[in-house]
Length: 488
Image (tube, rainbow, N blue to C red; front, side):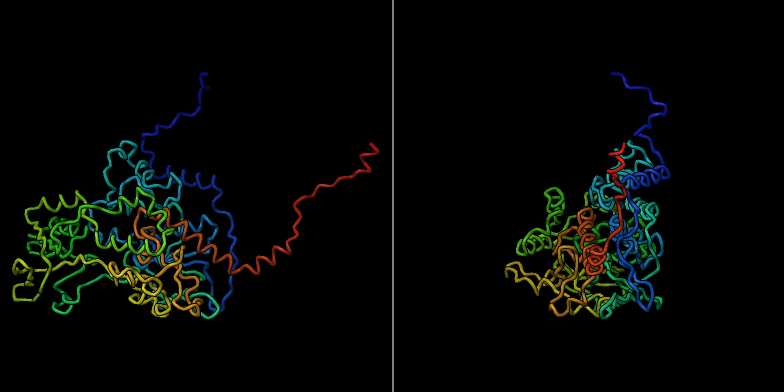
């Protein structure tokens, strides 16, 4: 049967429709899903001011995705706080120096199953379907642009330049969040969406911190003015992907030589995350028992991630690139000419050191958690690992509940932690990569939102049940008049 002619032209699916048109599509899709209905949560009065149902600390991809998830659950009395200026939330425009994201471009994350909110929809709106087909990996700057668009098109409530300095549990009530500007906010629930460093701090080897003045080195997580080091020799410590990100960034900005030092005899070649993505492990890691979780993460720590092929090739293409394998730093010392580094292969001098030495996760390292850190259960408190794989770095991680909630070491401390959620890298051992990697966010956000919503609901269960039992609003208003029917 021949279809009837259509009065409107059929849009070309390969064309770039533009972000304004995509924004209208997002609004239409959300309207079809009945998004934006009134909240079901109840207001809570406090003498110190307004009480938010949820405050999310961190406005990067995890915090924005969590905010949208809560709004989809009709929890709208929320606020996202980010310490950075608007447009610089997360690492993408700060310390990240890779050219592209490492995850496959097809992975979805914070769209929550809405096709018009995916990065692919964003890219195709700007470049068309052919542009998507031609794209290899997602450029870092474009991912940040997508996050800005996502925040704008969804109208997410974000307050920038708002650094949380202390989370204070109030007796019988909400949390008071103290900010660096001297103000404070109240929240029934607090979600710490503070990224890779949010569960602890970046690691500087103590022998370097003890032997060298601070001007001689920087961690890859810091702002580094490589242009100032033009013509100089730098040494980079570590086999992680950020070592090669920084090597190519430094050489591109005029650094004469970038030497990468790796203690292993060979670079890692296998990326275990690729297996996790394809096997269902990221989505269902939380269903494993503690023995399996610990063993898998001990292996994950031991394997490390290799650099991406394109980043390694980009760095290695510069004449000033050098790679030293089997070369742990045995000693560092400041000299008149720079910093002398001794390895098993000898001693050489460099103008500046860059440390790609990862991070240490431990709630005790977070200053904003100092009032509650002692109460937080760690893996070392809850699980006795096989001595063959015991790892103190794993043992220091918080032992989280299935919805990213912090749990107490002692049941007597439960009230101090009720309502605190660690939606950051510190959930790695308890919940796998679900909130610790871009590829896991689509699985992590629903878990988090369910946990927050359940707590909000149960907090008010007495009032909700009482109101239900008293509910008497008529819905059916029809009447039957049998006498009139008989007379007719």
